[in-house]
Length: 306
Image (cartoon, rainbow, N blue to C red):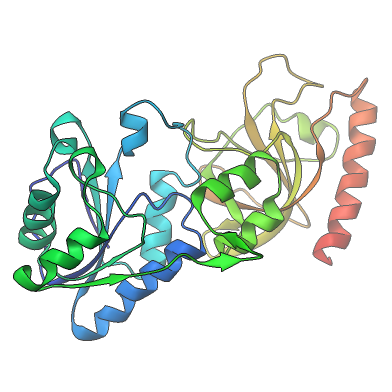
């Protein structure tokens, strides 16, 4: 996958099928949109995602800086899906002021050589967000591209959106969020050395420091799948500040893996959160912590069927 970042001067190596958006969370609605792009590859078009860095609401100061999907996670997902080109368009005062017609003409038509543009009904771009699907539809005949509107995906009487996913993650409803995302909510990061406290109580864990811009669910214990390279492992993950053993208030992601032996420090792991077990607690002693963790592990083995 070709990644175009930190520049608004670019030229696609071929004609493209494009979709514009934030793609935060990359939920089922986004995936429906992206499938339209991937279908166009049969016509020889390059499947191209056009997103913004930072998101407009973050730049203008009215949106959260914590994302459902970090830039690195997003790149990984797009590449696995088969996207050919990812544009991380630099959003600043100058680019934000681009008239919407100029945006279509310059960036989509001239630079990306778009022949197909898929968009949701709430698309906005250009100066003051004045660009929308109706503008694309109006400009399509003159500039030689097809504009296709993709309606929202509805499940359980809910319109699937990043706002809905964000609300579910904030309340720890990771199982429901996974249904709307199309895969479990994930936290991705390098495995680092911790204080090895888990080893002293016979429950060693893998430690990760989550990215500062990653939206985390409520602190607590979750059952999880952990992907390291081409391996998928079952585990139990604690997200939080470990109040029983630390006063640092430093947020960590620690995962105990069942039946695992090996050294994978320094590797990057993707932790997929499957279901919430319990909130993070401050115990009166290490013995109480150990007993509770052993109960969590046993329940986790039953959950994972191992």
